Image (cartoon, rainbow, N blue to C red; front, side, top):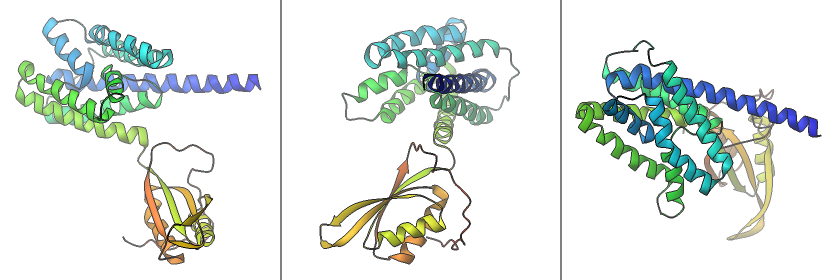
Length: 297
């Protein structure tokens, strides 16, 4: 038992370390080959570091570590040692990679192309680091702590801070560069979502129906998805009924609606995004049963 547990831990460690290294390299490439040569900035501490390195003429990687250290310590005090270690690992990896890639050829001198492709590289890199359990910016730590004592979400706090930081770049690099930087930031923001969540986003589905058993069988037969039955009674209808819980992919949503309506047009259905799904039965499998044609919404 202990030996197997250690093997699993080792595999998880190496997988996380590999993802963190690739993510750091991608983010550093986006900075050194696209954003910095075109005087564009990213959000958070990275953006402050880019502006500071330009004004003070010191290496970007060194400034990244120095400016993030107080936030890492704050994360250690408030969020625990594990969070601080993963944060420091991600930030240090990017700092090292910016040094290695400092003399890498410039990808383009066109600022709009630099904003787009730099944003893609940074977003992909940051997304990989997040999936590996790390972080690349101390501003996220501040946002998490503020979120605990404010009505604003972590995303809203980070968005506000980054718009303020990127706007400040207008005083150093010019307002046109600040606007291009906003383009890079929004591209990176979207690519982070795609990298973390995946293109084939998951959906959690709750279905309430008098014919829940028939609907469940249809979902298993035609979509190849497992279902969980939950006993329940409609407050406005005392007749026997039940609920179904299932997880599908985004592209299966239309067919699921068709399947459910075909069994019970009066069923009640709630579909929402599922940010994290674990289990060997979730991944899409080929279904031998004849598929029902997809219909438009």
